[in-house]
Amino acid sequence: MALPDEAAQTAKEGATNWLEPFWMPFTANRQFKAHPRLFVAAKDMHYTTQDGRQVLDGTAGLWCVNAGHARPRIVEAVQAQIAELDYAPAFQMGHPKAFELAARLATMAPSDLDHVFFTNSGSESVDTALKIAIAYHRVTGAGARQRLIGRARGYHGVGFGGISVGGIVNNRKFFGSLLNGVDHLPHTHSLEHMAFSRGQPEWGAHLADVLEDMVALHDASTIAAVIVEPLAGSAGALIPPKGYLERLRQICDKHGILLIFDEVITGFGRLGDSFACERFGVIPDIMTVAKGLTSGTVPAGAVFVRKHIYDAFMENAGGENAIELFHGYTYSGHPLAMAAGLAALDVYAEDGLFERAAGLAGHWEDAIHSLKDKPWVIDTRNLGLIGAIELEPRPDAPTARAFELFLRCYEAGVLVRTTGDIIALSPPLIISESQIDQIVETIGQVLDDLA
Ligand SMILES: Cc1ncc(COP(=O)(O)O)c(C=O)c1O
Image (tube, rainbow, N blue to C red; front, side, top):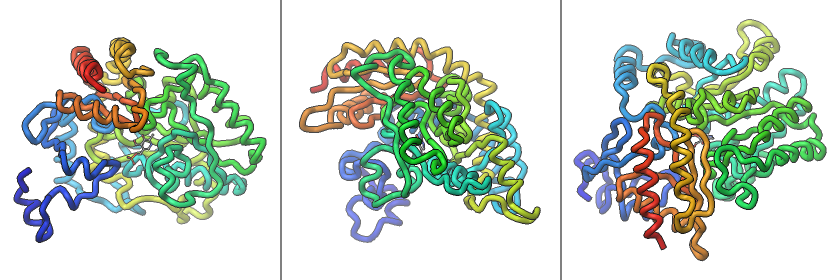
């Protein structure tokens, strides 16, 4: 591949491959650099590759471009913002759009999840939420509540807090002892009991009761919070069993434990409502978001807290000049992110995209499950505009079959995402029915031909 001029200027002398210096995240670097896949443009539902091909986006980038690519309203808002106010200090100063976006989000969120702390990513949102939970108990006189409970197969980003409560072994095992005092609920996925479920599986609500065992073991007085994704995305779209989240909420209430929902994937219409907590009718005490907040355009995240949590910090901090929470980022509420967030919310509302996702969910479900009898398929599952197709792993090479499918779909003009041997799909909410069919037909054709 030719070395672009700019890269040529910056490449170290003697570098033979201009792709080499960039250490890519969560990527097989050696494979990629031998067989690069580069996008150079994107519009609505499609990416353009460096060799000029159109690729249909079956994954909304990384579960984030909910409004579709390069929506003019968002593009123009960000362009105007950088010219008007590029940056304002985030500590002890403010700018109007951060307050405006927080107010819009607070209005959008259910119940009294009415205060919003801005971050720059899902990982930062998670670590912020965990810190707020622990600090909340301290400021309310229950400082012994420091233990955090996550869940097996949970993904909460890559900060030390997030990987500690997360439950994906490769994200944890290389990184030392992690946070102390963390325990994990079992995950809710069982091929034996729920394979090929349409929507929420019937089986599995009882798995929430393991939280009672943890309370019995550790005592509620030591437990700060439970964090789960309402629907576990990154581990392969694990759909919550009916009644499971309700049961977790009841047990947390009974024992004074805060419930945190990580809605980094499920927020902003992915399941057909503003947030998954609305869809499931289970309101957490703290909720993390990112990705769809700006439709993936500018890095941003946020943490919603219920009123009593915010009030506790305000009431217990001492004099008016005292800082109530010793936490924040240089780029919390960055003007570009706020402008992008406000414009993304406008696009979601004006185009009715959450309702659109809800309306497409039936067609999506039928399409995903049409792959049931294809070679290697051991499960198909769906909720909202999320779908997963789980493949039987090759005996000697787990993940290889799904990775090959990913490469072949890309060559055939469809972007899918794989995690382990699971194909996880989450298109922009602007997708059409015929584009859904194209994704599924392409996967089906590749499966027919896959060893
Ligand atoms: C549920 C959840 N939490 C947190 C994160 C981390 O977000 P980020 O990659 O923006 O740090 C992700 C990313 O996929 C996620 O799915």
